[in-house]
Length: 404
Image (cartoon, rainbow, N blue to C red; front, side, top):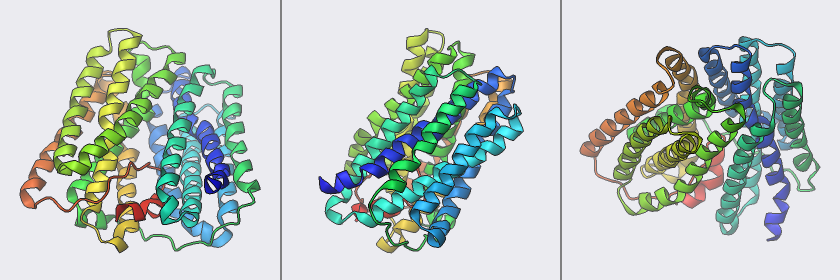
């Protein structure tokens, strides 16, 4: 209990950071549509976010080695605050894309600091509890960020200022904590080929997860507006997606620990296709039906990343786990960079249902690839499933002993 209390400052910073930088994506989408941005330009903002995310994951461990945890957290959070406030200075999609790169840097860098700090302080006895609480805090912060959008006026100075205040407030708990900064461990080498060498199915699975989740998170507001939701309901629409995903992570993990992960992954992909069809079918059924569709979609698609990650770790040695987690996160980010812009173009050309047609096609590809891989080699000895947040390359360090 004393250890959990000592981590309260870190967890408070995570929640405040989520409320600030985590709320910028839906606010930008709604504000951009109101300002006359095209669907493709709104999608570009989401892709720019994940471009900054990839850069932040690579840069932050090196920066921590130079200036320490607290100063690195302050630097990345300051970038996030600048990126949020700069939105009110100019109303241009390409300028906003640059600002969203800064927001992506903030999210990746700040989470890397928090996870590296936690990893350095936990023991084998407290690792499970700490990771579980951290996962709950992350989900609560994410839900709060989506719901916050419902009370903010799109495009207004006050809206962006409030998000900047939350982001800036995230500095206080971590920088004022009396906990001594941990020593800086060596940054994991980024070797994307390692993921493919250990598990081609796991590698493709995390790319599909990136294509799916980023499309909905970043372009979902466009879909919601297209099917008739008002701006104040977009927040509930995105929150339903996150809540559905949170509810399915652990049941999916239970199945993945008891049956061949490849069967579970294929089944989850099939459920994702069914959920996509259901979401499109429910689009004309009113607000409650649209919300139900978002929840079903999150329920079916959220576990794909964690199951793919666990499957890849089944074929890894203990000394490869951190670098493998980094490689899989990189591949996830590659999919997440591509999908928001691509899906927004498809929506602009073919209508809102095109997003779920795209998602269904990539899941069909995953099913075909999964069946092919099952013919190539037998199932491996399973490691313990861990519901893993897609936050930074260093998450592998925090959970590594739980996979043994």
